Length: 173
Image 1 (tube, rainbow, N blue to C red):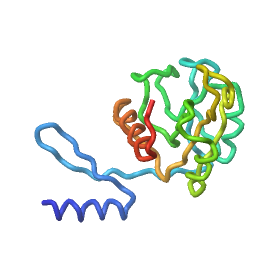
Image 2 (cartoon, rainbow, N blue to C red):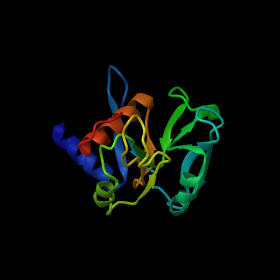
Image 3 (tube, rainbow, N blue to C red):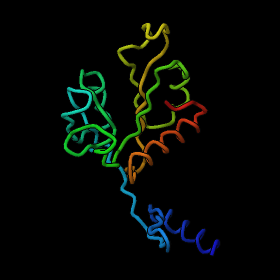
């Protein structure tokens, strides 16, 4: 069975698909098509308020700087009813946003680490300003993956983000 599963994974990978398990007692596997991301139509959510009024919209990844420089709150995720909560998170996102607030990764190091990736690095309003008695680099790193990311729930998203930070050797907040 193990060899057959390895072959199935190779086939899925060659077709830009993943294998998903479904069911609790009897586990069945199915192929799921991965959706490639169109850089001109990435989806993000934004609002004038921190938790409500979120609008999901698409735009060009290359023009993301305008959103980042605005006074709007933004999120990689999309939310039911425009209300940003764990329960309303749809599990669908086109980008990965990493927030560096505690000085754990210098901006210059991040630029070197991600030079070969499709990404945007934007400093925050508190960059190099005193916050909690600390002056340090504070920025967001927005990565564009090859395929749309779909999570079953918020906990799966949180696990994914912890794994990303762990791979970078950094603690997740």
